[in-house]
Image (cartoon, rainbow, N blue to C red; front, side, top):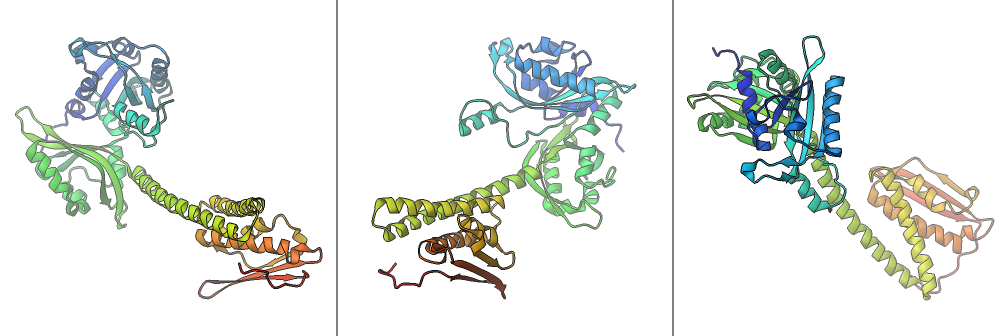
Length: 438
């Protein structure tokens, strides 16, 4: 049996920065990661107003103060995804100010009467990430990071009940594992949600989450316990059974296994902390697919334009005629692209493509008969150009070149999914033998 959990020790060993202010925005607690990030000792800031400890004026201070006050007065978590805030360097580090960029989450902690008693801040230094983005996308007005910065909340306070409440409410998932069998001592709400709200406290990990055994996580915890060295995982895939008798679901996690080291140097357990980044990973994969598809489509489009230019050059003798024909064909290609863009390039309808190409002509002279058919993107582009050429020929030489002429367009889908299309012209001038071969 293990004794009661020392939440103050857990708080101080969290690998990410946390601090806590009272209602007057004075420091009441800060963990070691916070002190290390800001180059301070606890004795330097204990009891100070946050803006006395880290003075600043202007927009950055106003944004930070507004966020803290919103969290305090509304009783709701408030996020600052990105805020520049210069930090005064201690004298032993050379003094002066250093420009830094932060991401912060402010979590209000109610007192016995429900009124906010404390405000917990989890902060993350994202200066390096933002500077990399500035290099990649060019300098100028600071752009928001597209990938969400990992937001966690925690706290420290002498009173054990407050610390437990902070632990349970943290937006990052947390668990305390004890002993050689990694028995689960404590999990917070985010961890319970991740694993499907299973009742796991008191169970060895291999019994609580049997599906993770063969995925290597037990062996990884054994290594952390034996070596006393933390493990940091980024976008690690884990398959979890999040519903009873349900299938395994792939989730992607950023997490840390932090050994809990006792005063005698022995490792008594492991603190698990992390965030579910599945949405970010899947969005990244989707973005890569879209970029690959975009590159493919751009190459295809350029090849199509090149083919149009060559075909047009073969058919005209004067530059003016080339310009008119080339522009008309490019417009037809553009119109089909618009139809595909409306459907996010999932395809385009046959009837809308025909309507676009025949829009300049008298609709009363055009009869269309056929079912609604959705064409794949590549087929839609090709047929759009075909219809443009047919309509142009009909207007110059065929049924649309005289008032009595009509177009009869019919189509059907025949097994196994083949499209049969008929373009018939009636009432036009007699066809003449071509003067040259095209």
